[in-house]
Amino acid sequence: MSDKRPGKRPGESRDGRPGEPPHEQPDRRPDARLVAAADIVFSATVRADSVAFEEAPSVAVTFSGEPAHESGSGSRRTGLPEHVSEGETYRAVRVGYVIAAKVVADETPGADEDP
Image (cartoon, rainbow, N blue to C red; front, side, top):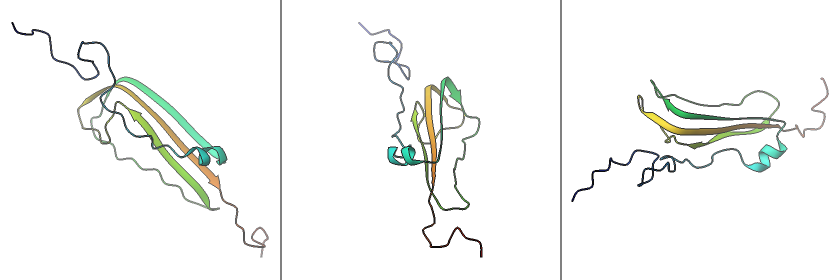
């Protein structure tokens, strides 16, 4: 007697019930200390039942300018691998992203004075 049940699909448990998404990435958001002390924090969470990429994205965040600063950014992703593949559809996607920056005061005596 053979088993005629359809194969397991991504995101399903063996019995066909919804399961955990197939991709879970480590939490790479800035540490809680920086976020709590930051002068500015931007955070966003996006969710999608499904998403596909026609072209694999190239992503980068940079911080520059004066005065000096301590900064960090990163995401916590579920349902997406570290590097996405073009044309592949990912299901049950969730991305939480945080950018935090803290201005670091110049400790040089007279730094606030005009010459």
